[in-house]
Image (cartoon, rainbow, N blue to C red; front, side):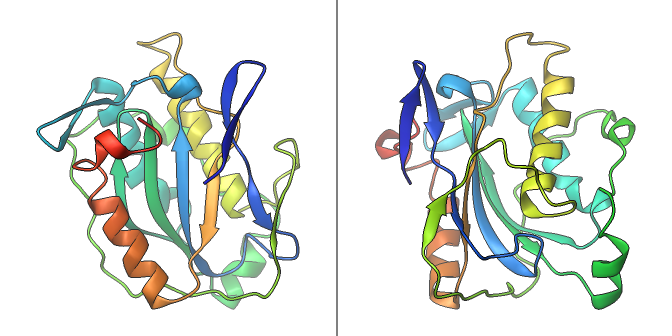
Length: 209
């Protein structure tokens, strides 16, 4: 996962397949980081993640994504001190593909419910696998997202988190970009799943710490 600095701030290079439709059915591994890797979400103690109030908030909003995008299934994920790792599966039916062509299916006002305690997600389905021979390349962060694509969903999630987090922490911010990777087969899926689960106990060696 490549990262560098731009104007003194850490950025994650956005790696995408040039001909891949990121609104299509597949399982994706994504990573979202806070600006400058600030520990807004809590701290690791004895190999376990202890969430801050903002950490509880972003966890709650993460779990609510399928309420606003019914074609999304959440898989294994983890909230870390300064980033989120998660597997998201897009599984639209033919009817849903037509229904969701025009606009995002989200109402930001519904995100303003009281935060609940952190509960790790469980795998409840088999991931949809994707394959493509194309190489990955970097695409500008300013690119307009296709409605109901992975990028559009992630950007909406980040926006709602920012609106609510800044009610108590005015300096909260995300990195402008995020990292995504198409999960191509079961072997890759299990490797990524284990990486996510073991992230807290491997925190000292984590490249994001």
